[in-house]
Image (cartoon, rainbow over the protein chains, first blue to last red):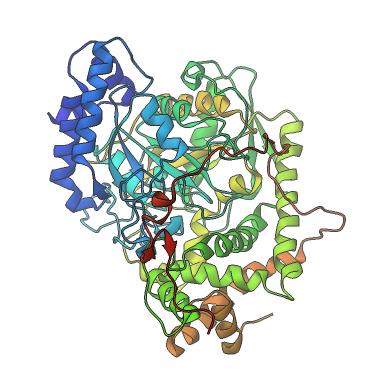
Length: 493
Length: 95
């Protein structure tokens, strides 16, 4: 049955339609793959085999009666940040112990409405705060990739590390993920697969545990560009329950694959050539430029002068919003409660025991920058800088640039429990240096694998587009994928 | 600006997170590291720049002021650590 799990969503869709196998068979193949390998990767924090098989049976029955949704019978993994009715939903935090929501997030409901099957909930950094998946209450996730000739365990990136590892290790056909500063694109790049963060407002945030509401956006992590296009079409929707969701028709993203790049202008921002960037990333970027040029695109040098301020502004805005969003975890309405001598003592003890170190650090930063006397100096200044970051992009797009090509990450995957990164939080934050600008400006960004480094580890390129022009990103990423090929880890598990 | 031990304790109190002396001492260094990193924003000239309030220009959607949800008290308290007759129970607040 192992070959069933190696199919892309598009391939499985075709074979299900041709009745070569059923959704139940496909789902069973994934469940046995999870059974065999999840203890190695720690990608799933909850597997839901009964629910999966029930959903698969229902899907097969629908297909028999001629009802076929866009994801009919396709088994997916769901990041633990999405509320799934009566199923483990804890944002991989101790403070949400035992939480079983009585409602379904809009994004997952859209997937089920289109016929998809849920395999279980995927590991992630606690409350999506991290770039290595090591802040999860459920422990680190292991990257299916290893450096040549090494058995050192590597991180899959974060915060959607479980999603990326599960897709890359063939433990689901595709996965939902979320991206606040790079949490879809960085793990996709670290595991040699595709991840897209759509424009802010493209997917409803309703039922997704909030981290930083003005930056959070859901998107898919998938084996290739086509699968990401198929999944995003189902995930995206306008939603009366999220007033920031946008009332624009959801295009058939798949239709944009294979379209020519002739006449398209691709911008190369000089600010993304950062100090200390490995030469191989520089080379990969040049290779990406060459591929797009060969495909008929015009390459132009551009400048995004406020790029270097995006990460510091992010580390004010995101913690500020997080400190407010996470105020709701007080031991009263859900999750963990640690008793105290009075109500304030109960709050303080509950939150001290329930939140991990990184989450506490960000709540503290957020509380500090919003506190009396500091609001103007930090928060207001950061929001003004954010306006400038967005303006940089607007100037470039107004000048006729259709998309921007950058590296996805400043390095390939690093080791679990890297001491250098653990000792300095800011160093870990620098992982998001190429991705965070996109969230600050609310733009869509896609990470697509483009090659391997000297150690044999995958590296990705990022394409940034105009608001709601995800089709341009899919079309351009597809050209890179066609040129670069696909990347699969050598199986050691 | 830099953060000292007293500030860390005050912020922890505001954030309702109990910290031990050891936690607080560690956080002084960490928070200063982050504050120093974000401090570079002060060099940006923001004269006449409006702070961002929404990344995509959009009008707030409105709807009729009508009840569209409710009658699910059992669901709402279903995940609470302690409840009684659909009330959340907390330690005594008023003496």
